[in-house]
Amino acid sequence: MTERPKKITTARIVRTERPTPHVIRLVLGGAELVGLPVGAYTDHYIKIVFPVPGVVYPDPMDLAAIRRDLPAAHWPRLRAYTVRAFDPVTAEMTVDVVHHGDQGVAGPWAAALRPGDPVHFTGPGGAYAPDPDADWHLLVGDESALPAIAAALARLPVGAPAVALVEVDGPADEQPLPSPGAVRLTWLHRGTRPVGEALVAAVRALEVPAGSGHAFVHGEATFVKELRRLLRVGWEVPRERLSISGYWRHGLDDEGWRATKQDWNRQVEAEENAVVPA
Image 1: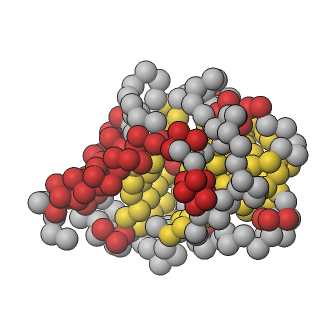
Image 2 (image 1 turned 120 degrees about the horizontal axis):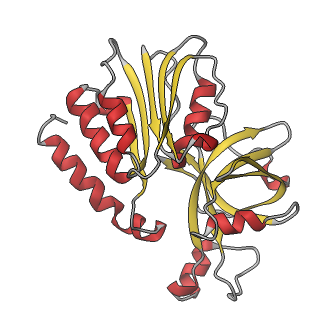
Image 3 (image 1 turned 90 degrees about the vertical axis):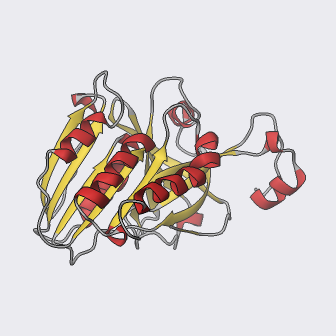
């Protein structure tokens, strides 16, 4: 996964929208978005910078200087969000934020935004785009992966075979996902089940397609781990044909997950290599 150096870009809110009850769509604009290197990947992401209330930061913001000169408790919090869309002509970038009332950092912040408000972020990073030469595509994820899945579906070649499985709370959280590909899209409604349980069952029920495929599986780490093993061992998908990672982990905030993710990835890879040669 590639990411630009930790330069902070400042955009402004152009407008906000509510495509579903649990999603706040931010449309960002401003001179600093002109020429932003977005377009190579469909999982482009930015890391929104959330200052600690009451802390005075250097102007312009400089993460390296902040981390050098201020105690860790005063460092801004960062949250990664996929770029849902970017228009290079108008230099407008669309980012979807999941909103569940007063929970979390980003949801309440997004709900309070108004046109003209500043948004600071680093990036973009990214690493995946659907291979136009693949015989089939599989895209699997929960709400956190929905923007990247939407962007990938929009990028598919005309008629490209694809299966997309997206898990959300319920029917009201579904949204249009247009694509030129031959997409079989299934919305899975979580209800009271654990995150990802329905996704794992749905992938297990699929027949393994013939030919060389390309898979994108992202979301809560527990189900991602299970599906990674299934695709690598059961489907025998080569590692280089998989974009698969835990965007978050139940029971941990973003800082906690980032602090443990590297060790978690090593453990998953070790378990995988014990069954499938690297």
